[in-house]
Image 1 (cartoon, rainbow over the protein chains, first blue to last red):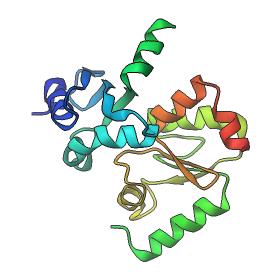
Image 2: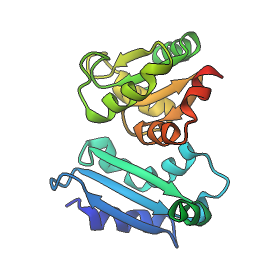
Image 3: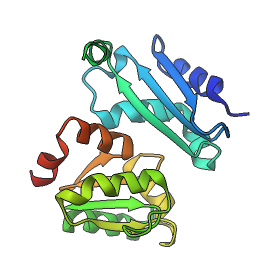
Image 4: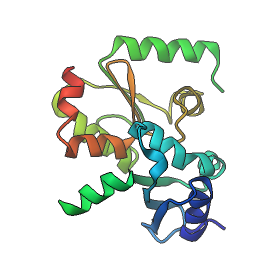
Amino acid sequence: MLNAIEIKRRIELALPGAQVEVNDTTGTNDHFEAKVISASFAGLSMVQQHQQVYAPLQDVLATGELHALALKTYTPSQWASATRR
Amino acid sequence: MLTPELKQRFDDEIKNHKVVIYMKGNQIFPACGFSAKAIELLKPFSALHTVDVLTTPGVRDAIKAYSNWPTIPQVYINGKFVGGSDIVTELASRGELESLVKG
């Protein structure tokens, strides 16, 4: 079954070393939000960063089992400056 | 499936309109909170050309393949794929959305 732990596991597997936080926003196992901090995002556009996170979830997004995944992506340095603000 | 006809349709649509939003529902009655959010953020800056993926046959899956993007809404500005509602929201909070539209 899809849940926050499974989504986190898949993203971590696809982006080794990433810091991943996933929350179920509705409590219904189909709407989630994720924050992903990964060094592999360096030099990528936001579109490309999000594509990297969607990649390991293609199947559940295609079936609609995962209806929504609100994403925030950061490189470690972007995250450092975001939290300093 | 992304047929040659649909690909041509997207190519033309994106070229001929400053802002194109593939969404659920329409500008007056968005059928999804994420689509509503994209409309709300972009409306102040430009006329919007919206395509309802729920009522246009084939478009929902085809646009996902065309953009290599698995979710709806999908926003194109000045011929370029900008992303979904998260990215539009992020650009708005950075104050970059208006210059992107006007650019």
